[in-house]
Length: 394
View 1 (cartoon, one colour):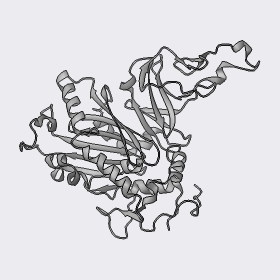
View 2 (cartoon, helix red, strand yellow):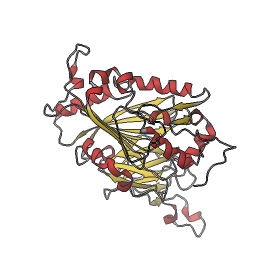
View 3 (tube, rainbow, N blue to C red):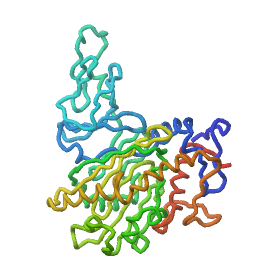
View 4 (tube, one colour):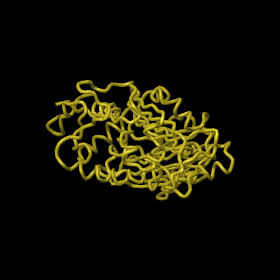
């Protein structure tokens, strides 16, 4: 990749554990990220099949700032299209989720089948003689599935999905109960006043220091592992010891397992650049995140059960998911405040510097294993970001 002119943007710090604060707030850098990160050679998670389980179901999302439309076809295939009419570019579907026998543009009533084919164009007798419906099908977006999770990419050179997922696959399978046969339970959605990189830069170091709930779960004493893959994905997985009833909560079932044969677990899989798959105690969630400019990030917390769950487990997963790890959950409530404070602080001069798990003079390279409470693994993600963006080190 050709390096960007350092005169027009910036030079990256020479010290491998330092990150320039400018990348969190400059509009020109954000515009380049839309091209080189969100339009680059990585997959972005946008849905699970359980969210559009029947033919005719659809869901809207974004790839960077490109509006996209996922449609469950009559043949069982979930296809992804640019969410715009091929006539005049009108935004087609506006609801977050819905059901339709076909898709129709409100402007001139062009109609599209669930497979994207144009099936109706009023007044076509007066169109140019070389007009052909097959030339105006909805524009497809490259997509692939793993255990029902739908990923999209804007690049033709992105590796096949399972190759790109690398060593995260068994951990994803564990979170999705082995087979990905999930039951959609609902969303919580939030907009954080922070850059998308601050949201995705979370790590294990802050867990027991910021979050009282992690201290209740005795995170420092948990058996766990953290590793980074060559594609800059991060897995942080821990098995908690039994949770003591200290009287801090009136209802301790929120920190316990419904299945008493299992111990509480916490697995966070962060896929570069902006997708998170999580298992918190017994809550299953996919977190879809979308940049809204240099200083805002929209996050959809989608909660799931398994199709074999009994109703008691479903109720438990709903209560635990919404109370533990959503935007107001008592594991992650503090994150929203810190995200905003990171954004404010990024306008001061200088660089940020990662320390926990860093060894002087030794760059972090992937694949690698780290302590579950280290922050050093994030430097693998930052190096991939720097390389994709084309920033030279000073």
